[in-house]
Image 1 (cartoon, rainbow, N blue to C red):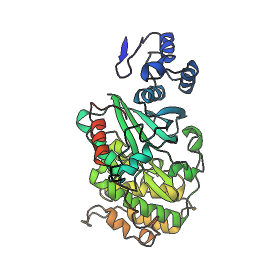
Image 2 (tube, rainbow, N blue to C red; image 1 turned 180 degrees about the horizontal axis):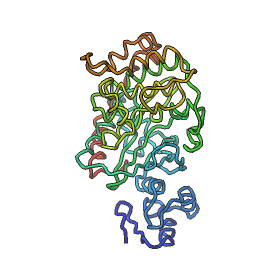
Image 3 (cartoon, rainbow, N blue to C red; image 1 turned 90 degrees about the vertical axis):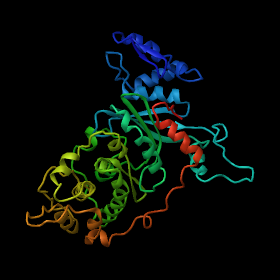
Image 4 (cartoon, helix red, strand yellow; image 1 turned 135 degrees about the vertical axis):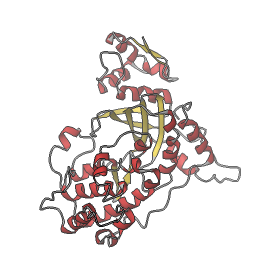
Length: 381
């Protein structure tokens, strides 16, 4: 018998009927309020991947985690919307008043301590649609302190998509809850598809290249974002690609980069290794994004092949970025600062002001909660 201590539920590996029986009662055993049979059936129908061994699939696991957390309500599975097979996405809603959550920090003078407005938004009384990802992975204990680092950075920098909470309810499940961007990823925009569409149908053809001005302005913003991530190391930057860049208005926001901090591999690693003499890893990630924006598909090898639709200025920029230095050129790999001086980016429109106004920092109360959450002992919000 396999025991899920986090939720207090047991599953017999050899009996799917036993799994189904306990699915009907997961609502009452994971939260203070009992759930209906209809809700359990809905969760089962939304996630029909409970394998014959009795192991919960990631989506149903997310639903159970929501009931355990008491802060989020499972809404709908989104399906396989990304290219990573070990990750599942679903929509959650959050409805919780600040006072009921114990997050009403107004002091006796009527004011509020710094950073409390972020918590007030997070704990607002209206339902908020957010997206949760469940990654099947193993995060080493010595890497888990990066969870706190990721939360603090994402909620304090306007170039990153905010992370609302992170949890490791068991050793092989990483749950990350983020804000939802209705426009979807930059790759969705390039292909003109809904972010809810399944990956096997929405990326099965060449997308529509962006204009030269959009490539320049978005690329310029990506440089700023990568400059924020670069101090965290190459492995964080190599998770920046068009599928992990989300648009809010015209501003691109970087997401999923924390996976690199936690030791999860990136498919860009081989590409960056090929360009090790030419570009630093952060600049290599930028080149890959710029190529996809200008051509409508991912770069699949060096030397790059450019379709006629690629804007000339973008092609010249990529030619310069991807040019392998001659052996007699003893220059180090090109950095983001050097790429920023290229004409395409030097004269590009800066989206939303210079680097945007930084978000309010988390209050000390919120930071203490995040420290507890990011430790191996922490519970979900």
